[in-house]
Image (cartoon, protein in one colour):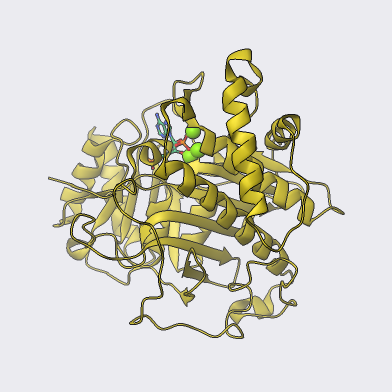
Length: 399
Ligand SMILES: Nc1ncnc2c1ncn2[C@@H]1O[C@H](COP(=O)(O)O)[C@@H](O)[C@H]1OP(=O)(O)O
Ligand SMILES: [Mg+2]
Ligand SMILES: [Mg+2]
Ligand SMILES: [Mg+2]
């Protein structure tokens, strides 16, 4: 038995409101969280453990927040009125939509414009190859319209519309190889495209690498409820959806609603007894072995059925304690990309969790566009990790 979590925004509004029962915080408490406008980005200041850190990424976090929020606006618009012609298939047979391309163009444009004096490096999933083909003319036209409408909807900026060629060039800024030197933005413009197409969970996932380490991450999850996803039933629930997770190295993870009305510090679950832990895995069985997860859960005595959720929304949900474990075991030979885990990884780590491969090694984001890892990805809190890793390794041996 399993729980599949998602909802169709085609039949359900995605308007956000302040939840009166959840505490709100003043701007002075969380200065870097509440400004969407880069122009009003706060001065650098120490927050929590960051007082001891030598480097602050406040400006980059404010820019990332603005870029991901605008990209989420574009994706929500497309998901509400998805046309058949909006969807294409890539050469690896995975789907891509006008929203994947549009979101990448929006994020790339905003980040580059924000930091004109530093070399711009972006490692992102999409490229313009297919869009330059004759048969994609209409698609490119629609993407360009969407990008211009989205950029114009940002009342803090005043830019002239991009041409189709500008959009193609902006998308292709994401071809960087990343690596261990300097700073690189890392973007998955829509993580969980299959979830997006089903009307379920997806995320805009943006991170910054500095000398090979993830130093900030933003996850925009337009369909994630503000309350726990495990108890969420879209057919009967009135819970508001649309979450933004923000993490900066040594400064914790915060969550607010996508409309900016909430900002709270989040923590991973403190559960120590695996029998009480619920776990997340991919909705798509082709992305991760459900059999292996189920054998691990059995060894640990986990009682609850798995919660199957698309995309890095799983990392966000785990960072606020909706569940205690996330297991991911792609088929042999599948190479994980850095944009599928960079933002999620820091969101969980700064909330007190740990992300490792199946061998217990931390993920290494310094090797280029791919992660080079042992078998799978395992996420939980500090207390549960030793037991979980033992169960993972025993189950892999038995397979
Ligand atoms: N065969 C595959 N195995 C594992 N992951 C995949 C596979 N095909 C695509 N993905 C990527 O897995 C992620 C979603 O996984 P899940 O929702 O299961 O956690 C996405 O990044 C998706 O790419 P994309 O970004 O194109 O959607
Ligand atoms: Mg994809
Ligand atoms: Mg992805
Ligand atoms: Mg993607």
